Amino acid sequence: MEKIEDLGIGGYRVIQSKEGFCFGSDAVLLSKFAKVKRGGRGLDLCTGTGIIPVLTYALYGPESIDAVEIIPRVADMAARTMELNGLSDIIRVKNADLKDAPEIYGSRVFDFVTCNPPYMNSGGGIVNPKDELALSRHEIACTLDDVVRVAAKCLKQTGKLFMVHRADRLCDVITTMRKHRIEPKRLAVVYPNSAGAASLILVEGLMNGRPQLRLEKPVFMYDDAGNYLQNISDNEELGMRN
Image 1 (cartoon, helix red, strand yellow):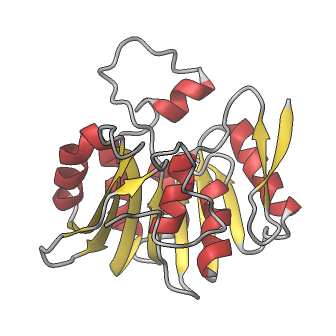
Image 2 (cartoon, rainbow, N blue to C red):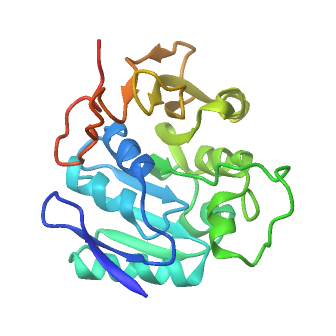
């Protein structure tokens, strides 16, 4: 069964499945972190039901975003989300393997790439490769290296990659980006609250950039009273604290 979720910004909504494929806080965080230039052309990999392209467009107004999703049923939900919002001509969803993106769209064509990839590497136990939720969570259909390699091929010479990942894979993310000539330039570490251990990282990388990483203030999901800080309509600095 499906449901329609109001995003609380610009009147935009997203179609989701009640059995799974509901967007999480990581999508909201990445959309706010990815400060893309107005009028640019973007590509969203592992788009799911299309939440990141919709929020990115609502916040920053790029000219267009192409979105790739490998699971047919989920790609269909994303396409219908764009129709629901009148964005089909701006955010174009394709049911495809992201590894084919350079052949589909061409090389050196995008100003930015966003991705909320599968977090779990393939060494995490037996996973059913036909399980849709497993595909979205585990590196079955694509690996971190696949994501960064494809981004590097599709980005313009000074394009940017914006990605969210698990905090415990920080070293993997940094080394993989450098392997493909995407230099990490901005990093924010996400904590559930002021007492919890880091849970996520947000990374901005510059294609062919020079080494120099700016570590942002920590991002907290909840304040000490348990209040959620990351409402998308409050486009402030990610709820960061001094």
